[in-house]
Image 1 (cartoon, rainbow, N blue to C red):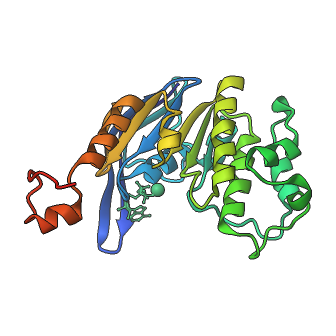
Image 2 (cartoon, rainbow, N blue to C red):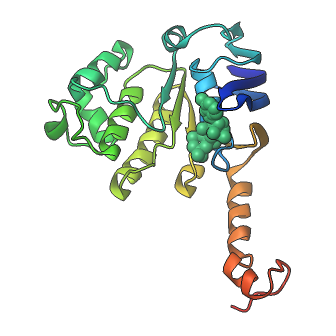
Length: 251
Ligand SMILES: Nc1ncnc2c1ncn2[C@@H]1O[C@H](COP(=O)(O)OP(=O)(O)OP(=O)(O)O)[C@@H](O)[C@H]1O
Ligand SMILES: [Mg+2]
């Protein structure tokens, strides 16, 4: 459905061009949930922004249902049904929450704006008529942003660390919302996340590090690896035992 073929990305850094993504090959299928994970600075948000058209690849191609969209900008890709919820959402200052959601809402989905707010753990009567300004907390803003993506009738929806800054109750609601979105619509969902609870939603886990996809794997394998890491000697222990990772932990 969405294909990235040999996608590379160079951007202008402080000291000239920096290689951000290297020959990314990725095929996303309809109605699947993908969780993209990996170390900080590995390139996850850059992959998402390249899918959305915020960054144009230096090399390679992006296809949507076989159509080459590599040269299309953000607006055209949005029209074709690609959506991205930013890791750090911009503030649409001066607009009411209800207006933002109504602008985003797709007529095909007959979305109720109050339901959307509920899905991200916000109470409609408190937020619908509230104007977005500096008084919004990071978590509130993040949830309005996620709701605006949920409002749209998308082919591919990418959520960049939706859990960041979100309280436990809203997080629980959000994981249910992703599951329901997946059950109800054909949208392909990509969630960038470091959270085990989100990893458990994945049909496939995409590991991104050093600007490449190092592995496409199952949630079981990744969760198993996390468990193994957990049971290994921890840094403090290793250090007090002379820094040898193979030394038996005394615990
Ligand atoms: N516009 C830019 N100019 C220069 N370098 C950039 C730019 N955007 C990203 N980078 C660099 O590219 C690398 C990948 O960044 P990216 O934001 O994609 O990582 P990430 O995997 O999303 O990390 P995190 O888990 O911290 O969100 C980082 O080293 C970052 O500093
Ligand atoms: Mg990121």
